[in-house]
Image 1: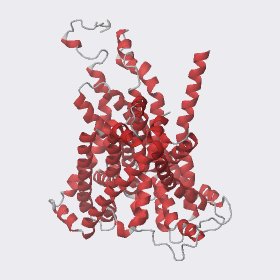
Image 2: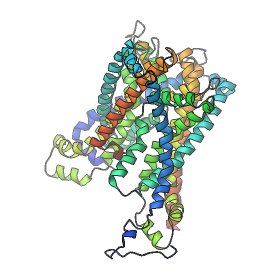
Image 3: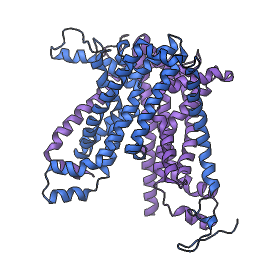
Image 4: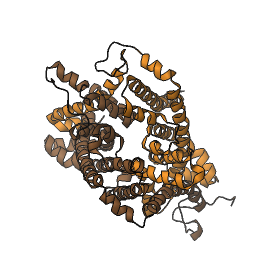
Length: 292
Length: 277
């Protein structure tokens, strides 16, 4: 094989070389096998463990899981929370992305800096910041006190109302970034053409901008929804015991109730639900292809 | 830049910008408060802080427990990042060579799935593996492997982005000249992908360094990674020590990630000098 084969376009190709020039079968195999084996071990093995563990009692664990009184409530709460957070994040995130491309340079710099700061710092640290803000005698209380608005300690910490803004803030960058890259790749001539032909801002937005950012809004929304389903740290710190998510209940089963089989069954339900949502959304909106 | 989009919005851009400014407050204000409370001269968390002192920073930096946790996080996260970087690179390069569109889509989805995986469920699964395979008990192997899986999508996404920017004619050109695929990989693709690999790896490192849910389940008793120590500290008593530690971790993350734009700028200047010379 030391003689290189040169194939002219259109020249008759022998079956052995009918493939993109320079790609041998061995090479894609050698390159892709290590990561695929890693996935089989690092992802397949734990999932297999979850399945075997949850069926240890012959499937009793699933019935028990649904009988745990906090589970049904937390399931509803988690889904409602994920939907609300997704909608708020996508709306705010789209406005944010539009503002970044539409504002003067100095303002754009500030908005980008805020976005990057929160993308680069950990979710836990940002949740700590929200705790300090919402504590009964915290920063928000002090701020309202400046205007004589806060006589009594705030009742915001570890409530549902107090949890949502924090979760939206934590998830916001994931909704802004895809919309921003979609906005930056809009063909400017289309917008100019719309203006030249007399379309107002609303019509231009509806018929030129909107259709081109909608796919990115959807894929950002799916990502936020799926991540919110598995949210653990922020609800733990800000929602308190009355606002436990599914993740919190699983943790309680593992560490307090000492029923790893129930924990495993709940985990299977959580992973299964999340994966179904993700895979359907991936087929519908091509979420994975919006990345990179 | 894309201010054409701005112009097309007309006066409607004013409410949009106002909403975005309010949203940016959601992003900044909690962080500013966190940093401010760590300056306090007193021994309680108060806002506005009492006076100004860096005593809580020296407290954290002198405390062997915080530093042990820091070192533990540092080396486990580095190892996970290394694994994720190698596998993510191989995946991104290998995927571009797969010819079937269908297989390509599925493999791509597989590589991104760990982002959507609920961390607690994955942690319970890994914990089960830990219990089942006795020789893993008390080691950090599952934590490192789990973190590598969590980090892999970030490397993969960023490196695939770089892969699509490589001139597709280079590879056939090289192989017509007799280069076998390892040589093409080494001489053409790897140098072109290196900046993307670096930014992917740094981002992955920061993500893994901050990851706490897997650590809750997988760190053997007696040891604590830095985020785990922070989470535990927040459950016990919220002290300025914790906000000082949080500030230090954030500064570290910002410094690490700032390497990317700086190296990019340096490379751009070098390229420019090369052109003018």
